Amino acid sequence: MDNDSTEDALAVIEADAQHTRRRFLRNGVTAVTGVLAGSAGLATATAQTGATIKEAAAATDKALTIPPWSKQPGALVGSRPYGKPSEFESGVIRHLRKTDKQYFSSSTRTPLQELDGIITPNGLFYERHHNGIPDINPVEHRLVVHGLVDNALSFTLNDIRRFPSQSRIYFLECSGNPGYAVYGKTAAEVNGLVSCAEWTGVSLKTILQEAGLKPEAKWVIAEGADGAGMTRSIPLEKCLDDAMLVYSQNGERLRPEQGYPLRLLLPGFEGNMSIKWLRRLQVADQPVHSREETSKYTDILPDGKAREFTFVMEAKSIITSPSGGQQVDGKGFHEIRGIAWSGKGRISKVEISLDEGKTWQPAQLQTPVLSKALTRFRFPWEWNGEPVVIQSRATDETGYTQPTLESLVAVRGVNNTYHNNAITPWRIASDGKVTHARA
Ligand SMILES: Nc1nc2c(c(=O)[nH]1)N[C@H]1C(S)=C(S)[C@@H](COP(=O)(O)O)O[C@H]1N2
Ligand SMILES: [Mo]
Image (cartoon, rainbow, N blue to C red; front, top):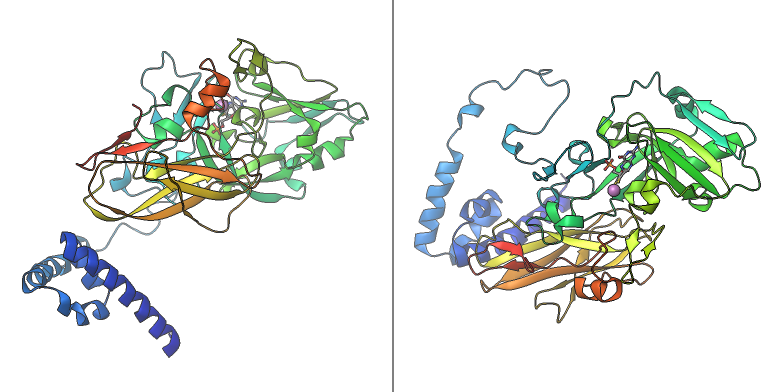
């Protein structure tokens, strides 16, 4: 480190120490952090009282005792050929609703409240399957492109991988998010049918051009190879825009749960249309009105009519910390954290309300803010220990702002469970317990 950067580093440590000391004087729990921040922290500790310095010294002595794991070799190198999280993180798992009558058509939810950043680890990516998870041998798998094309084609996985590739970060969200869990206990229950990954594959446009589109082509019908034979109609415009045929997720091959060996990914569109275990793309001049676009995934309007084809997932956000089921440890500084996303593009603003939605203050957005990806937001907050309702609302680059549940219901009535992007308010009680404000 050269001198300049040393000074910079010390300035940062000093700033941290100042901050930590302020907290320490108030609630007496972070002495060790302050001391470990470096000598700068100790040198300026004179503002502390004798008693707190003694406590800090005792805590430091204890924390510096050599633990057993520092006195022996660790697990053998190579003993974990495929790495997994620490055993102490074994509680961080997908949330499975325990009341379903069967688990062939069901879902698991991402534990949003346990995660940081914007990328969902593959093992925690939400799942929605309509007839279980097929185990497909990639050598036997084929993708057929036929219908209104010049040449019907059948591709092996190797064929697909030979095309020019691309990697993009996008969220995926089920339009049934939150569905039954509007008043769920945790962030996972309320909004865990959303995840975000870096997807690698081929632009769908490239594959369609390889087959050659006939002038009458207007829709592409995608079909999965699972026992559900999941089928959806996709407007050709989307297929020629940012749609992808994906074979890898976060650097490794897709997991079976996410559609191994090949899935469709339609950025910003309802998750149902991103057909997994993709076996067929039939180019057509009209949609097929499949089960998934007639009896399911339609929006029941107040007059009882069903609206077909609500493709784009609108702007949404949720505070993940502090969130339902968590405990706020005492008054003082807490960083409110969460995620926001929009199927229409970039998030332009996230606001936080601490007064039942009367006033709103801007949160900081973690850059880079990516289009149709999760965006992490943060809001520094001092809790005075009194009961409070905290909530976030997102605005996207089109100017659209996430609505309250009341304003959604006023427009759509109460028959509809899909495409609910309402604000989630969390109540913090005076004992620090966090619950859904409406539950
Ligand atoms: N073949 C097939 N594709 C499918 C499904 C399915 O059951 N079978 N479920 C759909 C639904 S409803 C959603 S929300 C997403 C879920 O993708 P994920 O399980 O990778 O999160 O996949 C979609 N694609
Ligand atoms: Mo879904």
